[in-house]
Structure formats: C-alpha cells, structure tokens
Length: 255
Ligand code: BMP
Image (tube, rainbow, N blue to C red; front, top):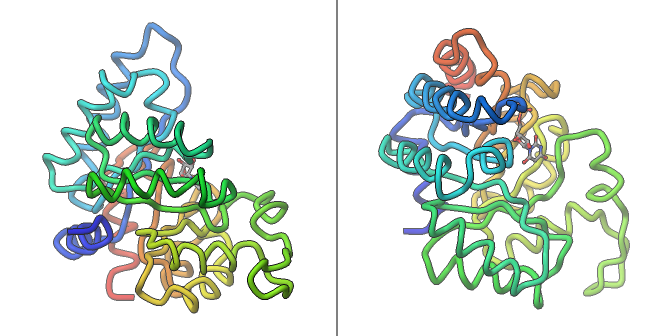
C-alpha cells in the first residue's frame, strides 16, 4: 500500500487529519535525556487525536537519528501512526539517496523534500529509493512563512509552454506528474491551498503547517482544501497537550 493510502487509512481510523509536529525549543546538552522524556510524554498524550507525527531537526540534532529518534519512531508506529521526517531534502541525487536510505532505515514512512532541486539527478533518485522501499515523498509547494513568496511565489516561464506561470502552481503540476504522495502548502495562505487543490484534486494530498503559532486557522485551511494539518507548538507547548490536540481535532471534525 502506498504512503498516501496509509495516511488516508490512519486519518480515517483515528478520525483526525492532524499531523503532530513533535518540535521543542533548544535544550542545553545536559538536558537531552529530559528532551526525549518530554517528547515521549507529549506523544503519549496527543496520539489519540493525530494520524501521523512529523519529526524535524529539533529532535534529530540533539537526540541522534539512530538513538533517541528511532525510539520515538518505534513508539509512533507502535501506536498505529505514521512517521514523517521533515528533512526538506535538498541536495544532488546521490546525496539525497543516502539521506533517504538512512531515514528509511531508522523507520520513517515518508520524507519531505524540496522541489527546487529539480528531477534529473535531484529528486529522481529520491523517488526511486522511496518506491523501492515502499515509502512516501512529500514536496514543498508553498511554505507557510512570510518570505515564502520570494521563491515559491515567483512568476516563472514554464519551459513546456513558454508561458508565464507561478512557481507554486508549476510545483503542484510537477508533484502530480512525478507521483508525489503529498505537497506542503501553508495554512497561512488558504487562497493558495484552493488553487493547488484545483490542480491536485484527490491525486496528491495537501499538508498544511502554520496553524496557531504562525497565525493560520485550522478551519479555513480545511475548507480551502487541506487534507492534513501539521501542528507543532499549539500542541507541544500547551500546558495540556492532550486537551489542545483534542480541541483542534474536534474543531475540524465534519468539515
Ligand atoms: P508550528 O505549528 O509550531 O508552527 O510548527 C510547524 C512545523 O512545520 C515546524 O516543524 C516547521 O518547521 C514545519 N513547516 C512549516 O512550519 N512551514 C512550512 O512551510 C513547512 C514546514 O515543514
């Protein structure tokens, strides 16, 4: 079964399209053990209300991929959730392949990658290894931060048609053509979610970070066409992460 289908099943069985971004602020060296314990506790509290967990450098840097993080990945998968590594893979193909092989060996179900690197000798080796190991690739399409427009929002000349087009719409079309499992479009730009949805329909899922701490609204993003919401600080920094995750999940149920 493809990663895209596994996500659909997990979201259905959990009754939630939330992807927990398991991010925490910097901890000095002596507190690494404490950081792992905190991450495990938040995961345990929030897991009934999410369908997947996204891990970023916030945890791989201090805990190490094959030490602390692989323990978390085991906990994530043991609870019936999918594990996504937000590496934003962004290098030449042979390097991307090694990055992917390590993260997939650590148990991750999918990787996030940057489409600016292009296909030949860039993304293709990454897609090849993910297909070989039956894992998923999610591509950035339009990021959630204010400066995203400088890259993803540029007007470019489409090499196929010779016509001007927007970079993020071109990335959406490429995600479809390349068979990506998902794209990232910020919850902070609901109009762009709707435009990308028009291109992708249900073929490629839309993942939207930026809810809460970055100013995006969960309900607006879902109404615009997001399939999954990626949420970090709103849950991880809450006094009661289980309550925060449940509230958020309830707020979008049935939309
Ligand atoms: P938060 O909900 O705390 O803002 O976290 C969002 C998470 O999603 C972070 O891990 C961030 O690195 C990631 N992210 C994002 O915020 N915007 C993007 O466009 C792409 C991301 O991966």
